[in-house]
Length: 442
Image (cartoon, rainbow, N blue to C red; front, side):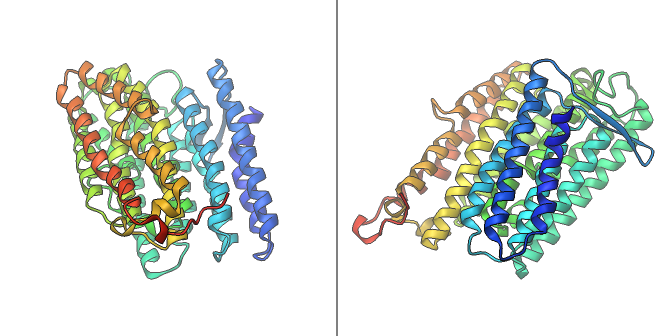
């Protein structure tokens, strides 16, 4: 239980302490950020390993008359590991990226508090805790989205808040309806609605999917995501690979398996169209990505596509599909954060953000472009990279669900992924090497 508490509060405590450090004392701020991020990762791993070993640490209480429960299960433990580990890499990347930037105290304070909010989503044991941390994440990431304080950043922040609060309203209505039906909101003891029947389940499922689908960027609820690219690159990476979008995806996984359950989902007519909604988002998202010349926008639309791989696996209601979904959560997050970090380095070192103007960047930043190339192959799903196996299991899930077209969607999207990324890597080396100075350190 102590590990669970320390995992949850490390980020928030670090954020509070960081806020008290003067703007000029950047070295001390970095020390605090690193220490508390490492602490959050250490205690998250200890909590997760205990869960995998069969333990079920839990904290229960009452908040304004509502039951509040933290009780991670294996799915939550996997999410906590992803979050805490990649947050450390984002912190290390931030130290260099933000070195000459302004408003570092605000940046790092909300950066750290957002860690606690995201871990709270992962460690939640009922819908009340999940909802509260989910909305706290909206509030703590908003200052990071508008960090530049430009007109574009403020407009992106407004769109982010409006979309997020609209989704929150749908979720809140759905939670009230769920409690009215089941009399409890705990994830323990099987799906919350396992004994429910009758009318209204289609609308209840719709409200949950629409609410969490905002952060999961399910089309047509995705429009806030490309706009949020005005945030600093480390935050873009967290928005797209770890915190916000994964909280939406995780929320949908919870709804499918912890609120409705396999049997009830299979009996709901609306649930039958969800795999096709995911398939549509996969294809349209990656097609739109290929049309973006600004690299970060290309990565943003690509995120929309990739998140629905995970949702597709969940919506098949097959063990193979769920296995593929969880593997893709792990694989995608690692690869996408790499792509964003590389995009940030390219922009900072060469001043170029457009793909069409990156000829020669490979000679100036060979290690960066090599990393970008490997991550790109992973997005395509090439052997022996980890996404090959996640997509393989997702295809098996589609076939097991009796739908070959779903498997063909995954194959087709892999081809479009190659069109989206591989030419960028090739272009970066299509220039005279002597005209592009070496810019990497070490």
